Image (cartoon, rainbow, N blue to C red; front, side, top):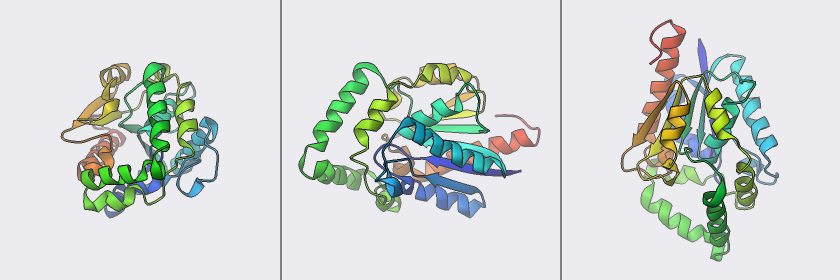
Length: 246
């Protein structure tokens, strides 16, 4: 059975962050698509809303599902959106799910603080771009460094996107997820704070913590992340053939 991997990027970046994963999957002969959310990448001129973001994910998933099974992969904000999407009351046609760097509840003082910090960073010269580039130069390997920001940075969509996340009922969504699920975090990821809670609420979930890695686990350790994609695909293949689920 054909499996398609659908990938959803995090806040401010774009589909280009998945180039390493797209190349890896292409080498394996696995169909894959990386979407741009509204207000990001090729859709920078659009306004970000939860409704249009979910519509983007849903369109990609349902298009992929026409050909077979779907592995949905989301990073950071994209992971939070995908968690809510997979755990909807009316489950979408997703057969397995990877949520990367997204195991924190986006609400309360933590979300308010993050928004305040993001606004302050946005007021710096160049909207903080020189600082961000300095950090990325020193943390990302050459093989992914150019890809991460190749689609541009969605500064204008950032606050609206963060604000919208506060209405997500992730606890309810997590309890409804019934497909094989992997939560993948970097060891030094600030969004690890609720990882044990996330895993405890999903019956078929596993937690993978990648050592010596930050929030940008897909770009900082691309070969490790690609290997974890292979694990998910092998699990799906085993289930489809009637073998063990894990």
